[in-house]
Image 1 (cartoon, rainbow, N blue to C red):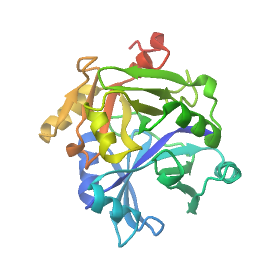
Image 2 (image 1 turned 90 degrees about the horizontal axis):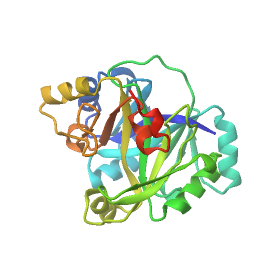
Image 3 (image 1 turned 180 degrees about the vertical axis):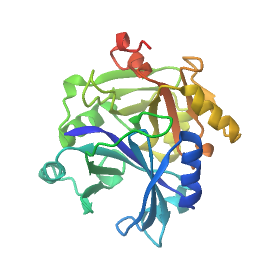
Image 4 (image 1 turned 90 degrees about the vertical axis):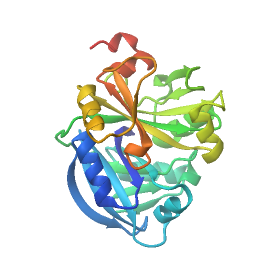
Length: 280
């Protein structure tokens, strides 16, 4: 029932400053300002590619303020699109998953999932803007990737036969890619189970437990993003398994606490079960 990775939501101290950052680095454009009483936040929304990034500044007590107080700026929730929000809401209720509704969207708190605050929005077409094409991955660190994969398949109506295994000794995890619609799309939740606690992801898991770790975007021009980062003297690193300009990681200090992977179009098929599609 999920059609794509649609958005990321960040807890930030200053939504206007955060919007400037996304515009400068990704060529994003501001699309609206509003508020979320449910989350206790004022919200600036920017679009990059066909995806949106919601920049949530506390407007009083609430889950956004609580996250900022405990962890500082960073990813608050991952967002996915569906063609039928009421049908998905009914499916969640049938499976005992508590959720809230606000302005036609669903919010599932992290306590109902393997550590991932989740927003479900109606699938709406958008014309791409900026330097990236779209979000295609959210990384959810979990205690047991097989159990988490079965859970998400159940509540979101995903076909587990289309999932792909993933393993990385370099980054210290094993896991599952819950591909929504391969090979037409790369969109998925990456479920990672730590195998090497001493590495960066393992250290994050030791602090935060089951949680959202990062997101990934595609672009036709990795070097253009790299130039924008360098112009701001922002931190980034090239992929260790593919030299620039194939991909890079934008450091959380550059994007208000969010780690973002950037890969050139189709590169991710190299580790997503369809390496023949990873050609330029």
